[in-house]
Structure formats: structure tokens, C-alpha cells
View: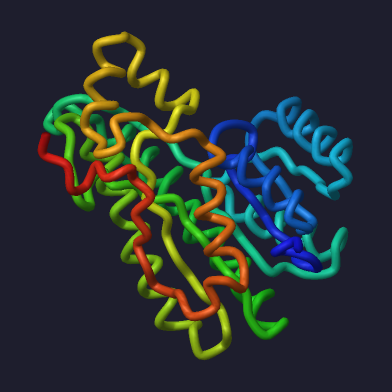
Length: 254
């Protein structure tokens, strides 16, 4: 039985990695999906793949830092598919890395704009539509970094992703009475282009793998399964959570 039959979802950061895998899984589980990212050609390819697998999807390319884009995604979901039940605000960036005292103000601001402000803008326009319908599920991609574990040189990334947890809790408390659930998923290391860009040597990859209790990194499809749980009615009494899907990196000291 498909777990999202009759539902409509928005997925940002859908051109690669966790977002792409989640969009495909949502469609396979019966949802009609609006996919968003900056790269139009990758979105076109994704929508074609979903269609070939008997799913339904539409795409809109743009910048998640734009409030007009956040609004347009909701409008597309409603005009094309009639409603909005699920919003997975997944787009993100590592941002400017390095010693915190050397991070530029512009780099700091850009990281927060992509990782945190974009999620706020998404939710700002997604939630009113969900309230109008009687409820829905909003999901953010945070991280274990800055929550249960820290790396030097990641201040902007850690601060922006930690901010998502506070946003999650505030929205969950505010809109729970109207049937809107809000949760954050906190991945460990996931084999995505972003991960490979940060860990481009065998030594670096071995180090990161060793941090996890499972002694491996995740596949994007594994994260997608956890996002599916939060999107579906299986998690109907789950809201305001920071859900670790981290392969045990938070508890490992070996």
C-alpha cells in the first residue's frame, strides 16, 4: 500500500542527493511532487524519471533565498495538483568554511540565508495553505553538526543548521493546534555530491566513516525513508522533534 496516496508534496534541493532520492520515493509512494532547485536541467531529468515510473511531478527552478520563489512553489502545488500536504525544505549548503575568526560577514550571511532563512520563508508560505486544509507535515534537513557533535571550521554551517531545530520547535508549538506537524531530520554523513566535495581523499572518507557506529556513511535513499516516515500518517503523533538519522555518530567514541 502506498503511504502518500492523494498527498501533494514540495521538495527543495531536489536536483541531487537526499532531496532527489526523497522526491522519487514520495512519488513512488503515491504523492504528486513539486521539485525545486537552482538547476533546471537536473529538475527536468528528475520529473521525466518520475513520469517514466508512473508518478506525477512538476518542477520550478529558482533560488530558495527568495520569498517570491517560496510563494511560487506553493502556488504551483495548488494550481497544478489542488493542495499541499507535505513540504520538505531540504536545500542547503556547507557555506564558507575555515577558522571562525576568518569567516567573512558575507559568507556567514549567505550560509544562514541558504540554510535557515530559506526554510523560514518556505514554511511561512507552506503552513497557511496546510492550515486552510486542516493540517500537513513540514520537514527540515538539519544535521548532527552543532547538535551532538562539532567539527572545527564549520561555525556558519553549524549555527544555521542548529537554528533549524529552534525553528522546528517554535512552528510545531504554534501550529500544532491547527494540525500542522513540524519536524527536523538530522543526518549523519551521507554519500552525496556535497559530502564528496568536503571529503575528497581516501583518508578523509575513512576518518568520517570511522566516526559512525555503523562504520559507513548513508545512502541518500536511507535518509529518504526517514523523511517519508515524518511525511506520512505513520508519524501522526510526532511533532517538534530533532530526529537523528546519523548511523550512531552522536554516540560513538571509538
